[in-house]
Amino acid sequence: MTTAGAAVIVGVAADAALRVPGVTGLPARLARRLAAAAVPARTYTMSHRAPPEAGIRAERACDGSGWKVEVRCALAEGRRPLDVARDVHDRVRTALVSRLAAAEPVTVTVTVTRVAARDGRG
Image (tube, rainbow, N blue to C red; front, top):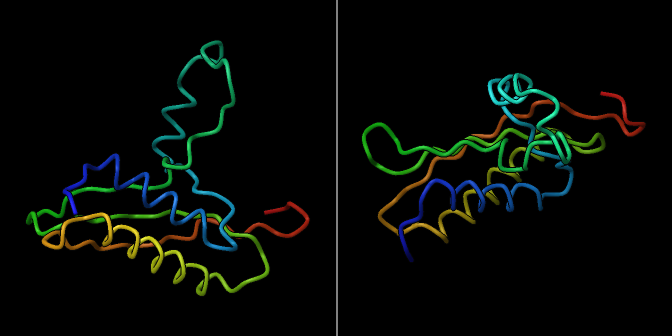
């Protein structure tokens, strides 16, 4: 196993989270959305959507003891948000532990930002 950088960790976490049934997306943090809104509209040549990785934040723990990963996800209605959040946590953590060196522990937190109704509202 090798030591991975933040970009690799974010990609692995995003891929694992998006594979969980019930997860509809990984919304960007408010700061990132505000920064994107400040860019003149004419610079957009493609979609205004943020990449899935925008909903993931990875940083080294303050004491250097490993990684802290935050996953923000939007869910579809139909399953209990707590169950989906637990599944996201477990899958992301498993994916990251298999990617990181054994000496690098990882802490994963999951925040549910919204639950969308089946008819598209919410």
